[in-house]
Amino acid sequence: MAARAALSRSRGLVPAVLVVLVAALGVAFVFVPWMLAGVGPGGGFDSERDLRGAVRESFVAYWGSGDRDVTPGLDRVVDYWFRFHLVKGAISALMLGVLIALGVIVWKAFVRADALGAGKRAALASAGVVVSLGAVFSLAALMANVQGLVAPLSSLMPMLMSGGEADPALTSTLGQVRGQLAASPGAGGHSPALDMLIDDFARYHAAMAVIAATVLAAFIAASVALWRGFARTDRSGRRARRVLASFGALTVLLSLALIVVTVANTYTAGHSAPALQAFFDGSW
Image (cartoon, rainbow, N blue to C red; front, side):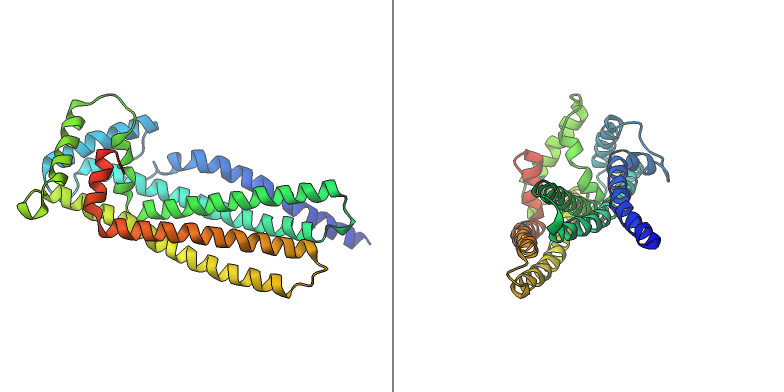
């Protein structure tokens, strides 16, 4: 009896430990990447404002160089952003794993909740929905950070276009970028620097196309397994069938969304110059 009681207590502690881990990883997701990314060659930045300023200053210098190879200043910022995505991606992966483990425990408890009242069953179902949504968010964050790892320069580009004080040098540079993008490539209108930006933008979207297609394949396989499980589960197991059907429907919806993401990013990767032009024009 004592051994059973100890085992029951240890099982009860597991969900609590997982919840604490999720909370800790949530805090780490927000704060830790900024700190750990600064540990490395070139150091880090005191704030997001400083990073944005460095991106703008180094981009202007890079564009002015006219070369395809990035300048040391821009290389430092890109290296920092690579490390940032590496740390954030690792935290996202850990959070996804913890949330999946917690979700399995919660939904199994819901399926076996015959002796519990309606209120407790509703609480378990609500907790399961929250955990499942958290897992979807963690997966999306993981995908975005892997994309940023593959093409950190393009991942930094939104910082050129948002916030910050008016900068005449940046305004002039962006005007030149737009002018070259509007020119015909065959007429010699693209500098080596712009060609590199176009290639990196294509790599950025090709990476997401591959990532989304990979996750899509996993969701299709999961959906098939869930619906098979639903069909094989006896009708008396109403809660089990409800859980299997709910996740089956969710994986179908997510698969449809991933098809859109895959197709859109594949198209953008194949038409990176006009897509980059749309981005710099503010209409992308």
